[in-house]
Amino acid sequence: MSTLTVTIDGGKLSFDLYELFGNVTQKVRAELIDQLAIQSEVIDEVMNQVIEGCTTDGSHGSTSFGGNPDATHGIDGARMRIAKASSDIAAREIERLADELKRAKARIDEGWAAYRREIEERRRYS
Image (cartoon, rainbow, N blue to C red; front, side, top):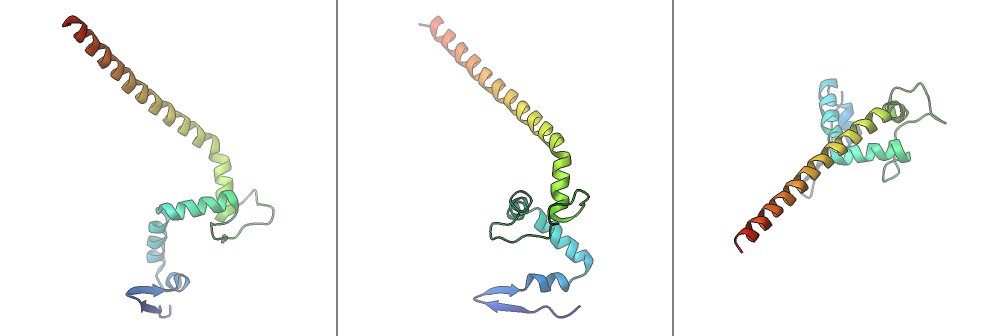
């Protein structure tokens, strides 16, 4: 490991991300990656790479020319995992949406029932 160069510019700490990853233990690197992996912006950019081939700014991880059906890592691996799991993912999403639709319908039905009760009450006392 070498020394990580950190500068302060306008009150902000600045460092080279590649240098950071090269200067931390494997455990710290795994923790950094784990924290980055749950950030919405990172998830969006990874999905851009998987679907479109590159990030919003045109960067991309390594891929095989023409794809690799045996890929288990990187962008090609992500594409294969998604392709293999897509029907399961779609089934779970359809089930989730159907459940939400049932809950919404129940709320609407309850609203109409309350409305009908209110109308009936008003008719009785008018």
